[in-house]
Length: 169
Image (cartoon, rainbow, N blue to C red; front, side):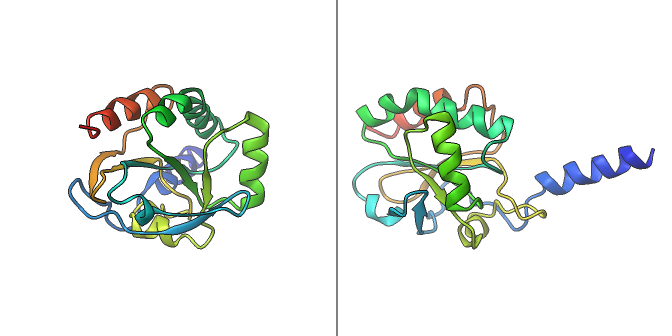
């Protein structure tokens, strides 16, 4: 019984969100983060140019995060065709992200938020200090157009692609 209690508590804490999440219509908090290779990405540099997909995930090289990332990898050419960047963000180190990218031949930027400031700004940092699995689709004006907080890692990439297409008119 004690084990069940602690497992339940762990699951609750792991998925609990600290702070309030952003809502559709809110301005997406700007950020500059580095990928595994030291390249810097700034959200506001896309304003007026294209929508942006920002997906937060708990930890590189875990089963759900791997399925989610590989789904984006497999659909990446479609995102490129429509000119929409996709950024995966976690609190993992750049070194961990590099291993994840190399192991699964990931072809899009994974950004390191080791300081957890961006996760806090987006309200996705859980009580254990990991990012919760939440996706934000930001429109050309920098406003949040869609929030996906119940992510199906199997269909995530296709769902996001369809939602992004609705913003390209």
